[in-house]
Length: 187
Image (tube, rainbow, N blue to C red; front, side, top):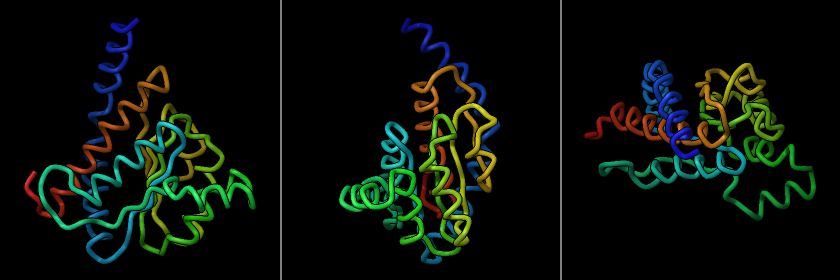
């Protein structure tokens, strides 16, 4: 069973090489947004929320080498806001309402979803587009509603959720590399 998982992961990693140009472009665009005072918002559910927080931690802290902290917010991490929104507006609005509160035209929202169909993540993408926030998705197999809705998406073709999440972490780190490179930080 473990060997099968490793094989599936290796195969999925072998298929994401074509995402390198997209990640470089995202890194370049994100560097412009952050240098100009914009911010990155990130959301996902469950393991994807953990990946979202991992990404923002790398940006507010550092990835490999020293650089200034970058404005990156994991939307699930404010427990009081999340529970108040779920209580008052329902779970589908938990991220969309925060996007409307924190997002500004020109900011970027990265949405992580292994299924690409999580109602609250799709609602966040719609809210972002309504206010002029750029939307990028990392999802599992397509077609899916999130990838179709976003300005750009990287699709991970893998047989199960665990493998998709593992590849998303590789993509998160690759985005950090691309961003640091665009910012002129030694990588």
